[in-house]
Image (tube, rainbow, N blue to C red; front, side, top):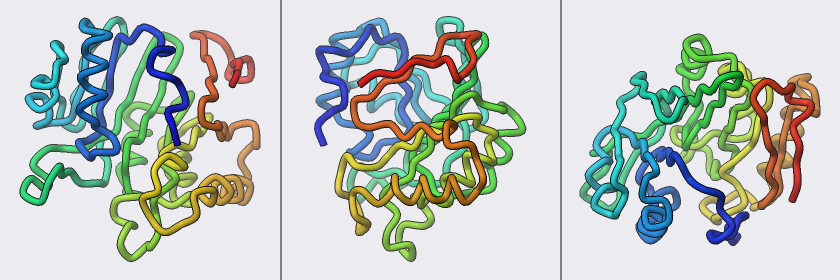
Length: 230
């Protein structure tokens, strides 16, 4: 699936949040291109990844460990746990950290789940930083379960994680872009909608976006007033 937003159509970039170092999440050519386009952007990365990123062009790169916080342009950003792993080759497995991210702005709180299996610290994140206006949770790349369960949630687990962190709205992500695992490419959103209904949550609180769809949240506005376009 090509990018939902063409590179030349990206808005000004102030902040880049990196969850881990896998190739489908950290592409060297893209890092260099972003660094050239937005040289003053702040990059936040999990522990051990700053040197790798900095050598590809970004100037302002800060490493954070789980539960550490920093301030960027009026935002409070917290590095939070995830259940995953890291590797760029056969010899560097788990030498850098992986994480999720919390973004707190005046009037808004957002949770970005990164890549993760289901884990008990979702509830701890919710207690410490929630509730959240929006939670972006991964729903794809989960079959076969005997192999993928430790590192990738299935849709039912993602809905549970959204509840655990206290997300008012869930935005499913990490599906339909790369063919990584055994499930059909269109299965994750269908299972997520079914799990959401079964949990008894309001349909309007599941934002199942198509590739290229954008929703805007303005500080102080109710979520029901958020606008969308494709």
